[in-house]
Length: 110
Image (cartoon, rainbow, N blue to C red; front, top):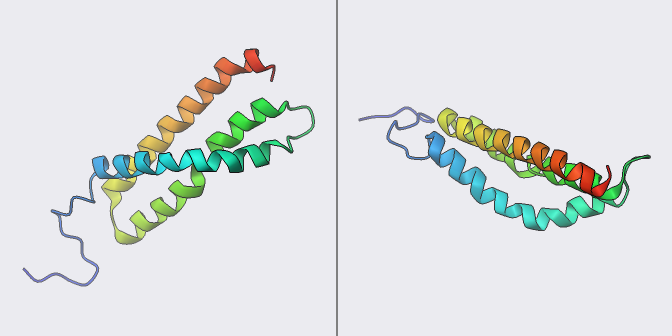
């Protein structure tokens, strides 16, 4: 079977939503080192915002620092199914971050 340059084999396991979701979950382990970046951002909250609430908001935003390049790479390689898995995990992360923020806002006084 001769393949064109850049053509993706249909049997490539990287082109599945499960692979994309797994890669995104593994990259979420980077969130712990990124927490330092988030806390650095949170030390300068906007006027009227308490720093703990802003830290939760910044913590959720840092996932795009590593999921963005992953999505770009998957799109460039043509792994559209894997992109769907990454986007699903990113959406779940946004929803969980919003729920945590809503639960913690009364506690930390945001």
